[in-house]
Image (tube, rainbow, N blue to C red):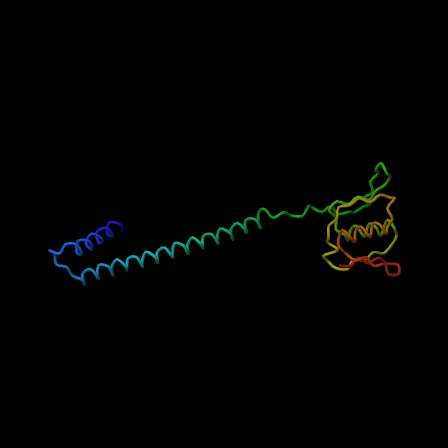
Length: 166
């Protein structure tokens, strides 16, 4: 490409500076037009290179996001369901201990322990996982208030029932 450019440039120089040779304005104009067509093609070629590079960058971003979503997306901790009373003996006495347990399971355990009715409204709230430890000095009202704050739920005391609502 560069050799072709140099040849064309040399021809233009020769045509314009050597009066002995036949000087032709038309011939010089044709050479200049041919050169301009080559430059236009080169610009088009550069546009395609830029478009391909932009597409490659977008594809790289999409691929990276997909890899994160599939391989690096943190999964919630494995739940430990409470089947029997999770009562532990501690230095301060007995304690209810929950590790990544759904709020529904915690309220069932509190119902058994305190003999009350607790209702949760909303599936997302029922599946909300909590890690907590409650000692025997804590009242049911304190425990329910704490669970309500942690789960960002409204606590309603109605008749003989406690309701947790989103």
